[in-house]
Image (cartoon, rainbow, N blue to C red; front, side, top):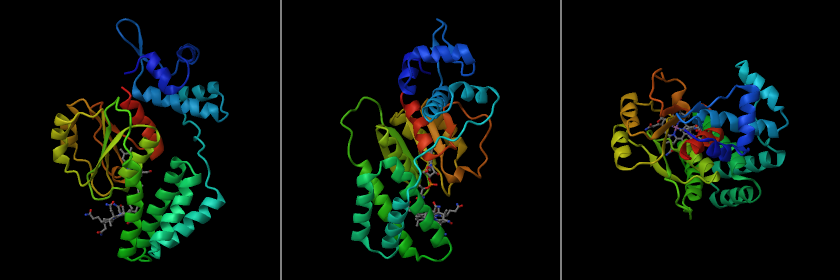
Length: 288
Ligand code: B12
């Protein structure tokens, strides 16, 4: 729970605005403490951040609150579109990767990094390449060796971004791990968070789920994120681990076809939004 000062800092609007919106629209209403102070939960802070982003993109705040009131979906937040120039450069990078042209690929990616923000590259270049390589391998257009080289190259670059340590050490790092072998999603999420100045500790692939309860007993992060691709959550271990009070966030393609129990503890969050939006939600949980 966040008091109004902390919520206003995270959302980026003065607390008077939050009070004003609450009394005018009455939609996002924080609980009150015994002393009558507002207590926002992570979901409310996340929703308000989305509203502020949409407002900055030209939407009227009253219209947005009206949509929420009627339980209608909010408009999509506009992200920077792919430019023709980047599309050409990433295609050239893809060709270098599948032709095992390592040094050219490094130069091409270096160039892309030199003039594009990290979030943009994660969305439009890294994710796109992982998916394209996966599809081409699946269709038999790419040998296993080439697929392994190309995806290892991308993972190595993501790892490199995570190895620069933070100078500040005020909050505990967010732990990120992948129960199965696929670690691209976990690495990408780590980079999205790092781009938001959140300290992350990446625990790598193949974390046995039966170890999670004891992990959270010995090491206490604020948040543990788990990425599922081919594997499914083992709910009994996760529920046991939730007794630690750590916020546990689950995400990844493997969750799409898995049955999520209805009565999960409040500190287990199944996040179905994009990696970038999920990193905003995780940042909020970590700020508690
Ligand atoms: C690289 C790769 C491998 C590598 C993994 C190496 C490694 N250490 O990571 C290797 C070669 C080992 C591999 C093996 C296998 N793979 Co594979 N692999 C891939 C590939 C090409 C890329 C994976 C990746 O990194 N994706 C990139 C990330 C960015 O995408 P993402 O995981 O979806 O993550 C995004 C979101 O989901 C979200 N997210 C992810 N995690 C989390 C967590 C949280 C908390 C949140 C909030 C959000 C979030 O954010 C990310 C960014 O937006 C994919 C293709 C694909 N479409 O992904 C296939 C793919 C995942 N593999 C697949 C398969 C089938 C396999 C094998 C079973 C093949 C086989 N027959 O042997 C084996 C698995 C063996 C095993 N022991 O389990 C299938 C899975 C199909 C399915 N389950 O429906 C895919 C989709 C390929 C395909 N088209 O068929 N693979």
